[in-house]
Length: 156
Ligand code: FES
Image 1 (tube, rainbow, N blue to C red):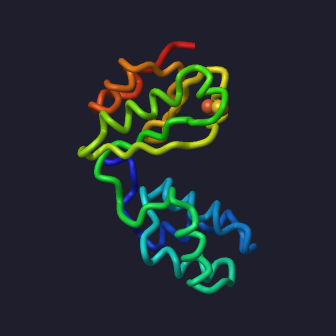
Image 2 (cartoon, rainbow, N blue to C red):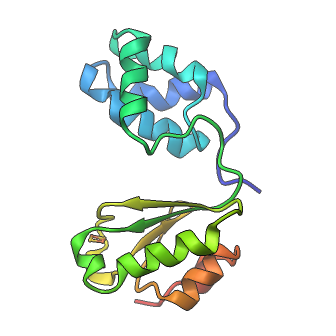
């Protein structure tokens, strides 16, 4: 079962509402939509443009500038591995490379992110929205294979 909500324009409007109507809200709006629906639906462009009083082209510009945005739902698990300094110092770069090899050709989406605010527990990752700390190769492989996130968490 997907952790994402099926696209619904009414719900998308509700997701956008708390962000206000300032043009600098475009990025957090798009992030919030992707977090809820797993991607930025084509209809979302008009909703965001209307909410912040920008053109659709300007919203498209933001979407295409940031490579994190997807235009269709991810087929499988989304693993976002931290590639920032503190996590790199404890093996994050090697894990990211390994994750890309493990996920190659499958449904798992592997993305690099730059600090998840979990630096003390690096290497850190966000797996289907759940923070995972002290990641190692063995637990990464389990995550790519679809094991429950809770099963690979290291107790604090
Ligand atoms: S540097 Fe990786 S979570 Fe902050």
